[in-house]
Length: 261
Image 1 (cartoon, rainbow, N blue to C red):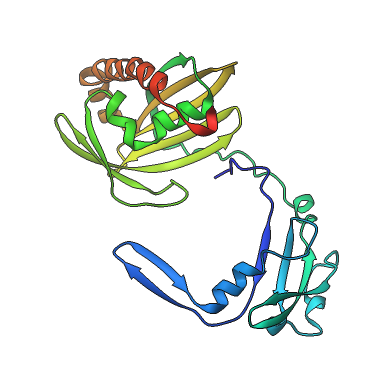
Image 2 (image 1 turned 45 degrees about the vertical axis):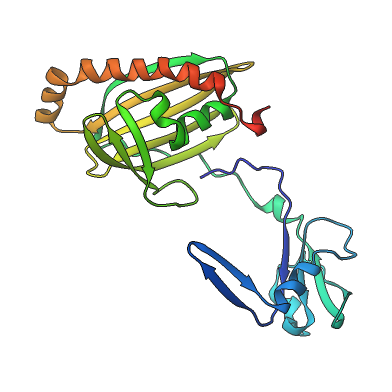
């Protein structure tokens, strides 16, 4: 998965100490005086905003020889309620020069065959259209035949997340099978639990507040299944997809995404 946050800076605080935790239902939290110290260390006299800070209790005199040659280690101290806490730090800005963009993933479609494709352009930005289509809370508002979607698992990134689709006629379980992000193009896919079919979503920026959505429907390669699908289901399902894309117009109009304003 490609990150959408390309301008983030990196701070690393490494400190050794004691802590404990508590849980209330699905909420889990760590507590302890050394956790407080670690948070306090974020307020320091280091001028640059990208660094790795290591407290004295984890440091060895020959430790710096184990790291990259460009790391220049300096020393300082933080005044806390428990007294002065010495630490060592080095800048991490050089890491950006050593990280190369990942090549776009190649979707494995060798065992699948595309049965049809539908597209529609919307007067909105790419992020709003991503939320409208990818956020399952909105799915029943536009996808024809879907009454409700229940998230069965919560994963980050979304790849692997399973959901139960409550349909007008029964239910089905699907999982997120791929995800790829670029500023002008986003792709993700959903596959049914039995891996018989997949829907590939492609969201492309086409102009100023204009974005196109394409849905490609695939099934497993099998001459019998392909023939039956073409005779019995293709036309009906294609019309459902077209209706869904039309339903999406109203959802996109009403949806307000803070980051897209």
